Image (cartoon, one colour):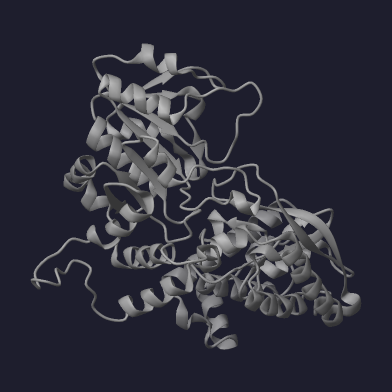
Amino acid sequence: MENPYRSIPSVDVCLSALEEEYPDLLKNVSRSRAREIITAFWDDVRRDIKDGRRRVATPLLQTCLPDIKNAIRMETRCGVRPVLNATGVVIHTNLGRSILPEKALQALTDTSSGYCSLELNRETGGRGSRHDIAENLLKDLCGAEAAVVVNNNAAAVLLVLNTLCEGGEVIVSRGELVEIGGSFRIPEIMERSGSILREVGTTNRTYLRDYEVAVTENTKALLRVHTSNYRIVGFHSAASLPQLAALGRQRGLLVIEDLGSGCLVDLTPYGLPPEPTVASVVSEGADMVMFSGDKALGGPQAGIVVGRKDLVDQLKLNPLMRALRCDKLCLTALEATLRQYCLPDVVSRIPTLRMITASPRELAAKAKRLATRLRKLLGERCAVSLRQGSSRVGGGAFPECDLPTTLICITPAYISANELKSRLLACTPPLLGRMEDNAFCLDTRTLRSRDCLLAERLLVEALSDPAGE
């Protein structure tokens, strides 16, 4: 019996065939990368032959050439590009978290299209400090003496602990030794900072007296960590921030709060559960507060530290500051976002807040309109129905909080819902929804008006060919 592997052509033969059949294909990919993709493709074919998943067709090259073309084309489509988010997760980590406000987008265009005053002293014409750009806004919004911005909240925690607690003990409740997305673990960050972790209490109950008896002459700080993406419910107790602040003043210790996804406004009037705002944490006695810029704040990725001026000044002098600082684009977008908080009706100005606080009635009407259009466009190719569901804030903010919504459920007639999902992921731009009860579901909470029109086109495209050819 003839060896089936002999039908696999050489890489050079494949390249020649591709150039002849698809003349423009290799213009946007290097020759060496194209060779790697072709080699990987045939390696997969060899495994399929060995495992009995593929029967060798003749001629093999002509049969597989379209698949090789698609593999190379995917290479040129990789990277950061727009995506339609119909998952209902507002602060979606996989999709870049918060959408920037329009004013921030305009500021980015203005700043990046030419030179800018990143480190310019506009009075002297000499060198200024990039730390001044957002500091005054943060001071006013948070009620703090000073502020500094780094590239994310993990960096903020690392910088604070390294600067203020290196070599000393930092007391943390066992229930707050969290791990959040991307394997960010508080104990490991503390170890890297040079501080020494001192656990107190138990997973579900930690009292003020646990902190009191743990203080030694080597203790530098009391650290509170927001549990971010989970909640301890039931038989639970934790020392309050005012209690820890009083203990800190009594023992001469710093009180540091890692707030995670920092909120600048109270969202309880919109039906969300209570979450501490940054200003409330500062007013309750925290010496230093760290939080993210790209979560509930609704800005770019950043780690923000607010607190006592003498302590923030020390952060700015730490050599790590150079490695952790933000660039002009981050600071520009953050400043423009913070300025929206100084204006009336801030919730309508920040896309993240607007999506989080969208009312069930508004979402039901939006879903009904889109479903009606989809029924007309798609006809017998699928069934379109509405049902009640729930969205999530995401990004570690408001954990376990369900936001009522209306889902558009699409059940294809000729392909499976999973096949529809795969086709929509391959579209330009990709459309992400979620699977529930064998239906592909759209949550309009995270679809803007212009997104809905594009989603219609993508669904028509994905369902136009039952065979997927």
